[in-house]
Image (cartoon, rainbow, N blue to C red; front, side, top):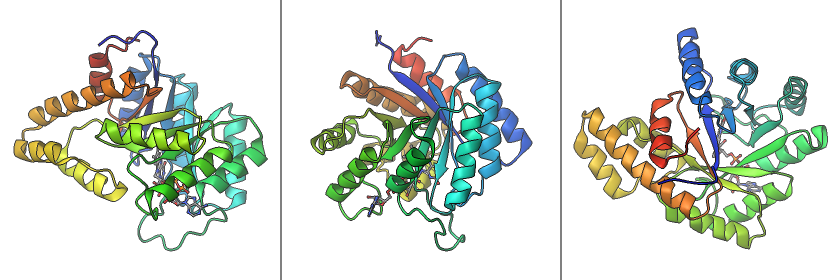
Length: 283
Ligand code: FAD
């Protein structure tokens, strides 16, 4: 498949706990930077657990690897004063894009202590503190956020977040292009006009993927699950099958009008690059 107008491509990383992990992250980021992505992003541990590591990683990716990098920021466990301080640090460092989230406190961290309850309030706060400085990304859930009362409510909440001032959205990952198109259609019906970019999770390890998907409410269709289970420890077959399934889904997404792809890299370059190359996205 060859795509003439290159869609927006971005890669997400998470800040690591060890120096060895951090060096590996930087090496993979350098490799991905060679493909001229539109931006990188780096996650944030709700409650501030990765506050310093996210900040350091973002500034390093942005200034040393020279790919514009968007920090994730979450409001569930941070006070307005803490959020204001972070926003100013990023603004003064020349960061122009931010991913605004409610976040999930890790189990054991107790009750949410933040002053803002939902991401729409965080988007409003960012706009009131920094006006139009940041391009604000928000999260979207084609298969519905696990805590939403129902799909309609979730779409209405998503639309509220957009009206608060978001510029574009990145979805939770999914394995069915149809659920993405359905969500976009419903969001458009609710008045949403911003780009909604599919979040893409390469498949490399079944047990990790199954655990992760249970927690975030992403459905692994039975035919994919059964095939991955059947491969057992045969990681090469899992990799090949996963690459084919995700490449085909990305082709459908792009042909159906998705404005870009956001890869959840899990700090590895190869699985995302394999899909990128299969799609003929060039560099
Ligand atoms: P919200 O948009 O606030 O929605 C949360 C829930 O509340 C939904 O069920 C929604 O329907 C409901 N809701 C929203 N507004 C209202 C309202 N006003 N009244 C009543 N109900 C409402 N988590 C992290 O901790 N760190 C990260 O770095 C991180 N990065 C992510 C990146 C992406 C692209 C995505 C898709 C998710 C990411 N997450 C991250 C996970 C995210 O924080 C969780 O999914 C979290 O549970 C919800 O965050 P949100 O910003 O979507 O919340």
